Length: 105
Image (cartoon, rainbow, N blue to C red; front, side, top):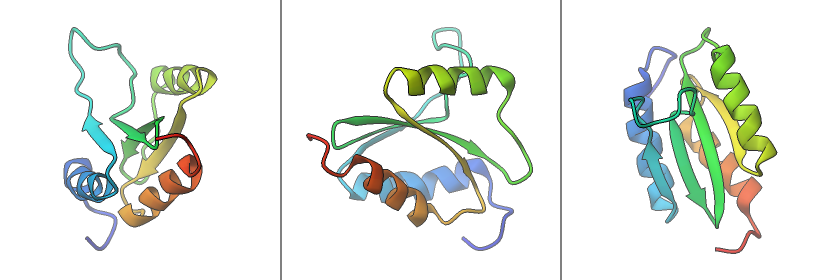
């Protein structure tokens, strides 16, 4: 997956596989009437820790609602990060690993 033109869907497919290979739970959230608006795109549970990832294409930014929700999640103890699809998915896995290492699993 070279270049910055990969779609969020394609990026998620690769990232999901890498996260699951670590033995972590990873799921894409889908907006709808039963989900809270502004929730990040991806929920990962790694080593007992909740990690939320908001996937964005280069040049785009989270909405104000997404920013507020991510701040609320951080205040509740979750790890939260905006991931741009021009970033190697492997670096996201390493970021998750480095921040959840030593957590009870």
